[in-house]
Length: 272
Length: 304
Image (cartoon, rainbow over all chains, first blue to last red):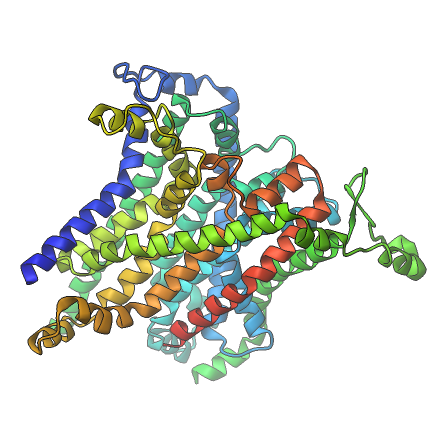
């Protein structure tokens, strides 16, 4: 019976991963297709990558998107970490349920509603829409994701180290930077990366809150995709997928190494 | 002692709460009231394209005069015009069917992952997360090349000889379901895996020893244990799918009615901002029930 079960398990996991990865693999393969047609394989070629390099509008959009993602992810990480500390450490305070509501609601809120409401805010306070309004919008959305990621680390955090530092007269502000922050750093970094990729990826909120001169890469891709599949879009998608994959794998290897080192240190401490 | 030190830093503590709180108040909560106000306005050929526009210069009398210009017409048209009613109902239907489909597809995957050798598990989890990190738009786009009339799936089926002419999948609801299941799958797998992984194997062994058939053991032991994961996963996918725009726009056809699309078209194509706001308000009212339930579920798991 156990053998039959594990056969079923292996098959379902294998099929599941095939489903998750096949479209991405196909997309990557066809970015190297010499033919412009999707179903016809015209031989290996990198011509679409060369064409991409000559597409100034696409490169501009990529540059704007990158700056936007770096800036909004950094702001979101600061705000989100503060929000996580508020939720885990400060127990009950006036407006606490409003606060946690504002943290969790954006996680599931349909993009069209968030985008529309932010745009109408920007219109009613009459500020010029463009790069900065999208940055504010992305910061607002992604700080909630950062807050949830950091919060989950803070919940299992051992506070005795902090208390020891405070008892020994270390000021709270310094304690945070010397003790707390290094210990929750993996979660903060993960939160930053999540915020960065969410910003890189967002189409709907950016479309609502942007203005003239600030077309992001997803907006550019979206406007071209409506006319069907083009190998150039496959090429830029492949580049994005590669960057993200390298980032995620590097981060997880880094975390694993930290974990191994920590365990080694613990063992040494126990022996000593 | 530690508590004393913290009391000494009351101002710091106040700042830590106030900064994110104020930010979310200004950029998340207040904008919703703004949308609510605008949903009672009327479309106008002006900048901004609605009236009335409240202004401090109006004075109190002017304020009340403008207040009377607010109307319920937008909301009423959402309930009387069959196009909007249909879009809301169709969104809820698509979201409900997709949620069930995702659960059915995700469960065996999460179960298999949770029963995989321990040393593989963290890698399997990372492999589920990895496509989630890659762009949503790109992953939806990938399906256009697969599902189209000239696409790879039709090419493959023709080559197999299963069909003798291409079948239309893209621009139908089928393509929308495939795209939704594909895009939202990780959101269901991860919470399911988290609960299934903690399950004690000996429970199943005990059931088997006592003569309980595996299928019955599944429904009596495994499924109830995984229920928190099932609930979290269902909320995480159902709510955003209801307002989904990108997938029905790119994979669906003109017959695919979803409210996210309606809102987008009213806003960008018809430039009817008040009506788009009313669409958002009613959508939010529909989603408030599942959102509040989701938050309560989060709070319960937080408390644990």
